[in-house]
Length: 394
Image (cartoon, rainbow, N blue to C red; front, side):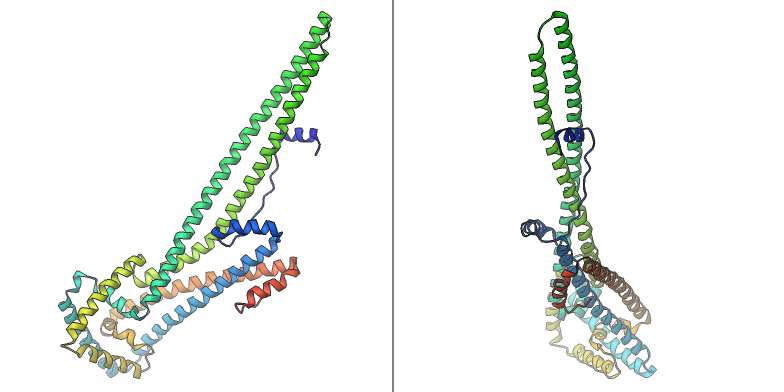
C-alpha cells in the first residue's frame, strides 16, 4: 500500500477481519496457542483435537448416565415385582417390615436422633454408606469443576468487555487524529495562500517559508500515518481477542450445562445442597451408628429381622433387597411407595434429558469431524488415532 493510499485509509473506517479460535480449557489455551503459532499447526488440526475431546467426553457421559438409568429402572422393576406378589406373600413382607420399623423407632428414641439428623437423612446415608467415598469424590470433582468454569466464564466476560472498551477508545483516538489532520491541512493551505499573497503584494521571496510549512506538514502527516496504522493494528488484534473470548465462552458454556445438570441431579438424588452438607450428615450418621451398635449389643432383633426381610425379598425375585430393608415405610404404606415411584420417575426424566443432550453433542461432534475430513482428508489418520484410543468409530 502506497503512502497516499494509507493517508486515504485514515479518513475511512478500517475494516476488521474476524477470527475465531478453538479451545480446550481456559488454563491451557494461551500456552497452547503460543506453541501452535511457533510450530505452525493448522487450525483444522486444532478443530480435530477439540471435536475429538467433545465426542469422547459426551460418550463417557452417556455411558455413566445409562448405568445410573439402568439402576433406577432396576428399582422400578423391583417395585413391580413386589406389587405383583401374591397377597399372602405381601402380607408376610409387610409384617416383617413393620417389625423392622418398630425396632428402628425404638432405636431412634434411644438415640434422640432428632437432635442430630432427620430419619429420612439417616436412611438416605444408610442406603449409600458403602459408596459414600465414591459419592464424596464425585461431588468434589463436580463442585471444583463448577467453580473453575464459573471463574473461566467471568474471566472471559471481563476479557470481552475490556476489548470492547479498548476498541471504543481506539476509534475515539482515530477520530481525533483524522480531525487533527484535516485541521492541519486546512491551516497549512490557508497559511501558504497568505504567504503567497504577501509575496505578491510586497514583492518578497516566500519560497523558503512555504517549503518549511510543507516540510512540517509532511513530517507531521507521516507521524500521524504511522500512529494511525499502529492503532488500526491494535484494533484488529483487540477484535481478534474479543472473538476468541466469545468463542471460548460458547465452548465453556457446553461444559457448564453438562456439569451443572449432573450436579443438580446428584443434589436432588441425595436431597442436599452441597458436598459440605452431605459430609455433615455423614458425620452425624457415623456418631449415631456407633451408638446404635452399642444399643444393639443388648438386642439383636433388628439385624435378625433385616436379614429375614432381605432373604424373603430375594427369594421372590427382588434384585436389590437390601435397598428395601432400608426403605420399609414403602413396603408398609402404599402412599410411601407412590412417593418412591414419583422420585424415581423424576430421576429417570432428568437422566433421559442428560442422555439426549450428550447424544446430540456427540452426534454434532461426529458430523463436524466428517465435514473437516471432507475439507482436509489428510487429517483422517489423526482422527483415527484420537478416537481409537477410546474405541470410538466414525
